[in-house]
Length: 245
Image (cartoon, rainbow, N blue to C red):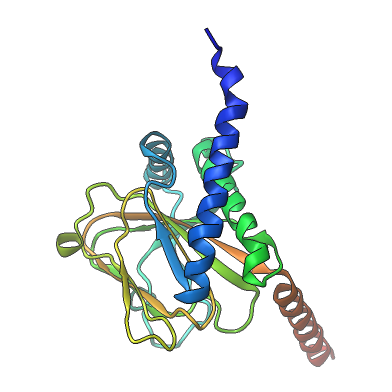
């Protein structure tokens, strides 16, 4: 009888070929045409449940904190803009092995897309683990990268079993720039959503009335990211010079 470890190279090859087909035949054409794409059953039930279990443990251990706003507005309540609780992980932390497996697969998928998207993507953010606690919290219409900070592609993996949008709300609504439609994405278990991070895709999270989990990562355009860092360094240097006695 063939041992399980002997089958691994074949299984890895099969997985890689599936990712390549997904990238070139579905993800790339959809991003270039509509600006977004989602795929269901990305990890499969077993691996998906392992990721969900690890995210629930992070939540129950009190590791998630209120999400912050990029810019503070006086007199504006944070929760009126975004009501999620978040934490950032690398996937290398103890107890996040399944999350790391998820991130590895998304990395592979995006790397297979890069040559066809006209982008130079060599890095990504940490993973943002997010929970909307089910009290009607959402996130108002916004753009992930409105100011050329380098974020190029947004990937969101959803973890919500038996989600009923009519009862639970929590849709992610995309308003594709220049398109005569909106796209309502239900945050269904084991669904991966991919879209451009810039002004092409304003989006909102509608109020959620059940606990809603997701993991988000952003991939960086290397040239835009380097320019954003240069501008930040220049701004910081000028600010320090201006404050010198």
